[in-house]
Image (tube, rainbow over all chains, first blue to last red; front, side, top):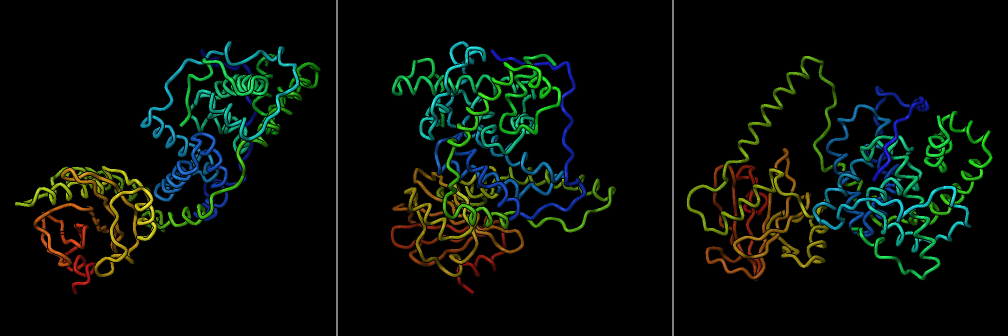
Length: 202
Length: 250
């Protein structure tokens, strides 16, 4: 079950881009230097394998080397790169067939905000990755992009090819779920109920 | 904007508050409960963001990425005028159709030993992009390192002529006539490619030790030879002179 929102109000104006379509594009090296670290972090968070993550990043920049000159709006370079990496990951995941499609069950994963008054669970890198691995990839992808802080929620929507309202609802539910999983991990020494293990990461 | 809509938007902008709309921010200013919730949520999000993934990047990744710049065709330096662009697109579409049709043609002609025919078909698929490379690497040595690490058939450290010094696209592992084999793709001048397929411990009777045997098949020029336990076939659509140059025969 997924909440797709129809907003009855005007969404905030898109910020003015400082670069124009007609501006000359940055060099390949400038683009690599500006984005490869963020892309690598995204890839590692999604596939949990450094070797695979490097392959994904290389494949992404190879695509850029071949097709980047077709991108007319230079302000979209970052979104283009993240979109490409995400698609590469998706196609790899489909080939591997390692993450079955599952219906998201908010009652099992999340909690309403009003109930969320306990002290936040402690977070360390290892525990966080264990918790992220429990999330369905449809929720993990926007969540990881959100925590990387590289993209706005609008850009995340564009990158993942889903409506803005869906990004917002997925982020909210995924955060609730992540928090719940982290609390459980903290309190039960890493023993998770079976329904959290319905998804697997690459 | 309802409170719930504002909550969702604020939740999506805790780490980038500049992305939140004025309407959503106004909700926070007049709703103390919502403000407290956002504050708590932000603290949690910041702790998660800090723990997400270490910023360390693998050594050498940047250099490998920068090397990819040369793995594509040179960009156009001048933009054609609109009518020319349309014409060029039509021509490109026609060329693409022609190319696709051509790619479907079997590259094998005449009587050819089965292993060579199968090898050439595998090479043709790689050249036409119908089979994706397993690993991309700009130099022969990097390709070899990958193949040694992966345990796939790997060509020798030394090859005839100037093959070892040619830039590479990467490699593809295949199975030919029941034998595992590896195709290494070399980049040539004039957008041409050469492909070396190598077998380990294969027993093909029609190859000669260290003596490349040349032949043609449609527009392909081939050379086969063996060295120790390794059997090689080099194939290219470049002319025969180029094949001989690669093998050091001229």
